[in-house]
Length: 470
Ligand code: DGY
Image (cartoon, rainbow, N blue to C red; front, side, top):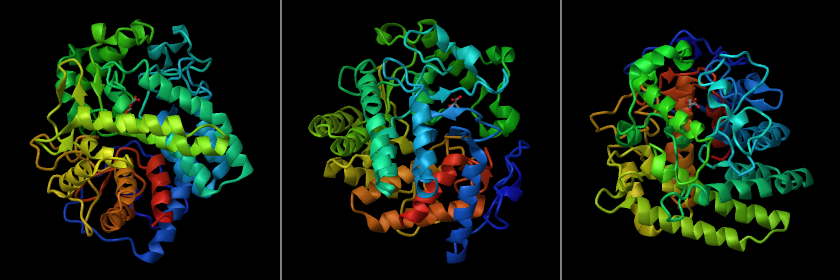
């Protein structure tokens, strides 16, 4: 990526998503809050980025790195579009849910059929969804991503309620319910009411240190990757991406699921990666809270959603909270143990409005510790991994860099739990991050130098929401 993409000055067009590699981190760049005049510039940059990434009925996360439609990206994108292009916000969600499988799963990628073969790895030919029972006509992947869509639909409606938005909710509601039913039914591998993820990509935090232990048990050889052409490293610095060994394992896990035609039957008996993730399951619970609100608009009964939300929160606390570390951890269902890594995933249950006080206090203590640095005045948003951990890597994807979406989720959680002081500090740091680095995909957690894609849609859309709700 070009360093010239950083910062909102000289706005009008979004930075080109230049495939030349990310800038070197600029050590010593002081953190500065965005001056008031720059807020309008930031807003313009965000809108231009989203407009440039709009692709006839959906938004690509990035023209270069991610040229198809991604599931949780679309939810975050809709939240931002609601502020500026509400029709597109609904279109985004409708296009995604039009590719929902008969069993209720919402695929993590919907492939754009007009792109040439080989325009992404792994592409539709690798996923082979056409052969699977209940797959839609469109080519998709067979895995899912965190279910943040009900919350997105609710926020889009709440932004500008109208007959058209109520109509959109009526169309989406049964589909969102089916998504929840799939996750709490077929994916309840642990039998405790939580959803298991079957691939690190389902967490959205692909190469988080949280997955190192469960991934180590997946047999793979990095040399396997010689048979494939990775797409990400053709567009971004390989030192900022998952390793070839990670990818060999990603491919092996997809192959296991695909070769069983994406069935979820008796997963514990044969699938190599099965984990209960705190972010994924917090999103699952928050989705039931959002569905309760949506139900009231569409004339359905909110009661069962509230009951399910309470059960999910209770299970998240019982299964994933460790009183010894005072934070949440993923549970590896292959060993029935909590994964020891302390990552940003452990803070995400704060998005549950009914999280008990004890866990709220524990998460705030963890977030405000030197590991993550949350404070009423803070130079930078939270990194994705514990800064004091020996495997903290400030440049490598989800192993340290700061991302807008995890910070945005935390910001929402802080507001839900009545911490306006911390929410204000975090918001300011998020604005300063994009003011310094531009609408990049992720950022060096100290310098805010932009990494990955230089024109990343959810950075733009969550920036719009952060700007609007200050
Ligand atoms: C994928 O290929 O979907 C990965 O999540 C990209 O990060």
